[in-house]
Image (cartoon, rainbow, N blue to C red):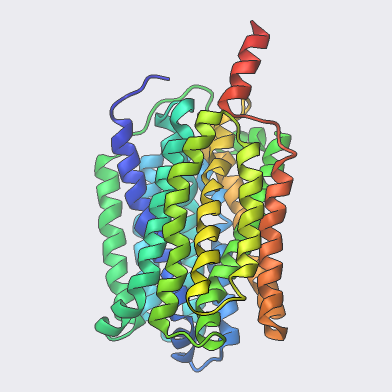
Length: 398
């Protein structure tokens, strides 16, 4: 693949869209979960359906990724971002719990079109030997956006006068970034593309794609469950202030940014994916559980290791582009399928874990941590796709 200098413009645009629309705009709401449901006269049990509604809508990612393969990432991501801004504004104006639930689901629908095509945009423009690093940088942007949301949201809500005006302002920012994407992004013609339905069918026939899907289901379900509950747990069970809880949970994300920059690049140098991804996931799952145990300054240690080890996640979105039967041409459908499975986990696992947490908070964290660790073990059953395996295959063919 030709190394066009324009690939760095693509990466900058992908980082911007990952950081706010796919990052902060998605997860910041977990920091205002309690006051949000109270605003509608509901108890905290009403938070689970709201948080899961985003993942339910985002199961559209399979179709969203295939749309990117068919119509190009420029148009699909740009339109999805603008629609996301509308969904955020509708959330800020919701007058009833059902209206809020619908706005959360609509946001997820837009996320399902946006997220897989950001990975495809990177996969279209970067050669295999830079793909781990490029995806790491892009998803590092996502981690940075989520971290900024965790830190800024309590202060932003206080200064803006509530979660509603903050959400409306966020809608404007998302709309502006989407316009910048439409202006600055270019699609790249790829060989091997297919119609919408044909692309999905071709990807669905690849055995390893289904393993990858299950890995992401387990990871994202465990992650969203733990992340969606942790800020409230730190406040209600550990006695932290909302601002302090935001700072503590942001440690996970800042460490993830570092991990996402370092670990995939190391995987590129080693030339292997499974050897790096599996232990990283097992460590991450262990840290999710351990983060529920300490208090005070000791809490920072498992949170930092949790984020750093989770830096292996970008590799999950590298592997489809390295599969001979998928590659960049069908990468959008493949990543979309993985994201659909992930958001199915993101819908179900938080609800299941919150039921366990109602009995004992540690049960919830144990469940979510086990899901993440299982993703790492399952990843070992994939065929190796890293640069070293590619070179070995090329040598064998010769």
